[in-house]
Amino acid sequence: MDSKAIFLDRDGVVNRERSFTWKLEDFEILPGFVPALKIWQAKGYRFIIVSNQSGIAKGLYRQEDTELLHSHLVKEMAAEGIEFDEIYYCVHHPDVSACICRKPDSLFIEKALSRFRLKASACYFIGDKDRDVEAARKAGVTGILIEANRSLLEIIQLID
Image 1 (cartoon, rainbow, N blue to C red):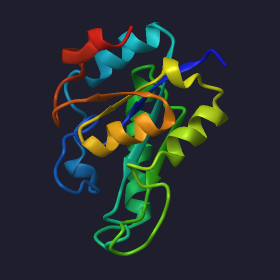
Image 2: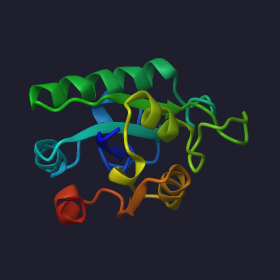
Image 3: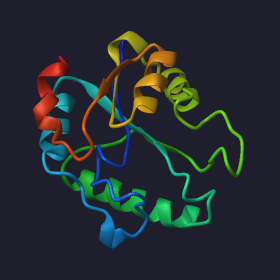
Image 4: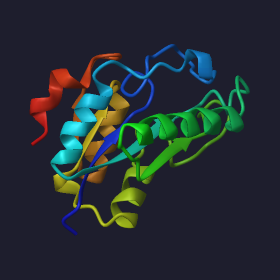
C-alpha cells in the first residue's frame, strides 16, 4: 500500500461552482485545473473525485444528467492525458433520504483507499467546503480547504 492519490471535490474545485451544475453548457473546467493535475500526475498521484450531488435527491436533475457530465469530463481529461480512477458521487440529501456516503461522511474515501490500495497518510483531499475537509479527516487523509473556483496552481506547493 504505497499508492497515493488526490481526492477532489467536483463543483468549485474541478469545475466552476454554479449552485447546482448538471447542464453540459454550464460545466466549465476551472483554469489551472489541467496543469495542476499534470504536475501532480508526474509526481505519481492518482485522481479520484468525491462529490455530493443532492440535486438528484431534490428532483432538480436526474442521475443520467450527472453521468453525462462525468462522461464529458473523463473524455476531456483523457485528451489531456489525465485519468480519474473513479468518480464517486452521493445522490442523497438529508431532507429527502438518509445515507452514509454524503460528505462529511467518509464512505467514498474509505472505499477508494481500500479498492485502490492507497495509503491514507500519503493522500490529500482538496475541497471548497468544510465538509470536504471533515470527510478527509475521518478517513485519515490530509484535507486542503480552498476558496471555490480557485486555480489549483495557487496551491500546487502544498502537495509534494
